Image (cartoon, rainbow, N blue to C red; front, top):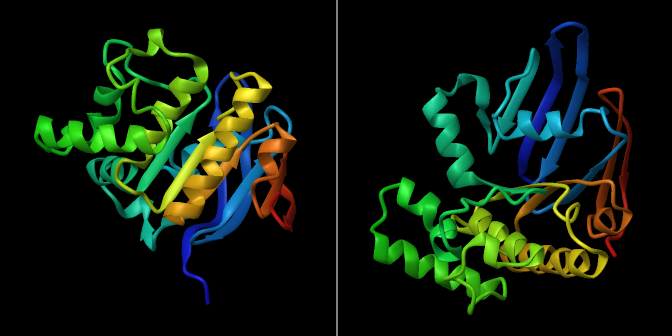
Length: 231
C-alpha cells in the first residue's frame, strides 16, 4: 500500500464575517507519497483555502488534517511553522521573494532560520540554484530578474530541505505561456529527481496535465477526482 503523505478527513472551513462563507464543505482527500495532484475549479471554489489548510496556515472549522501521519491540530504554532519550513515546499503565483535579498540569500533564508551558518547555507543555496538553471543569477535581486527567473528562485527555495510535499498555487499565473511551459517542465524534472508529492492549484489545463490526478472543486466540495496519464 502506498504511504499517504496528505490526509484530509471531512474537512470544513467556514468564514464568519458580514456573510457566512463555507469555503470547504466536508472535503475528504488522501495523497500518496510521490503523487502529483492538480486542483481546479472556478474562483471561490475553495482551492486556495485547501492549500492553506494543508500547510497549516489556516485551521479547519471541523475535520482533521494529517501530514506525514502528524495531526496538525495537535501541533503547537511553532511545530506547524517548523513543519511548513522543513517538510512542505511552497510556491506562489507572486513568488513571495524578499526584495532586498539576492537569489542565493532568498534560497538560503529557510536554512539560516534553522541556525545553519551563513557559508554552509549559501553553498547549499547556490547548488540548488544551479539545479534549477540559475547558476549565474544568484547575486541578483528579484527586481533584476525576469518573472521566470524569480519563479525558479522560488522553486529552489521550496526545495532547499528536500521536502516530501510541494504545494504550488498558480505557479505559472504571472508568466507568459513560453516561460510557464519552462516552469512546468522544471516541476516535472523536480518530481522525477526528488520524488516529491505535489498539489498544484491552477486554472491552466497545461499545468494540470503534468499531474496524474485531477481534482475539481465547486462550492467547497470535490465534484470529481480522476486518475489519468500525465502529459
